[in-house]
Length: 71
Image (tube, rainbow, N blue to C red; front, side, top):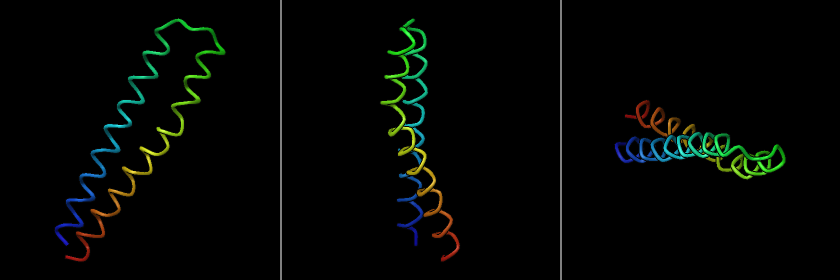
């Protein structure tokens, strides 16, 4: 069960790091003073990464909780 907890923690950390990357990339896009269409295009390309990062961090937290409950 310890492996389940540590792998869940690692997945959560990777997900949170990807979320931070999405935030930084969105702030950079906003500060670049792009046109509305170009800004929308960049943010639409970041959306799947953002959703994947959210899923990965949530799944990692679920693994941690399951590992704790089973130990």
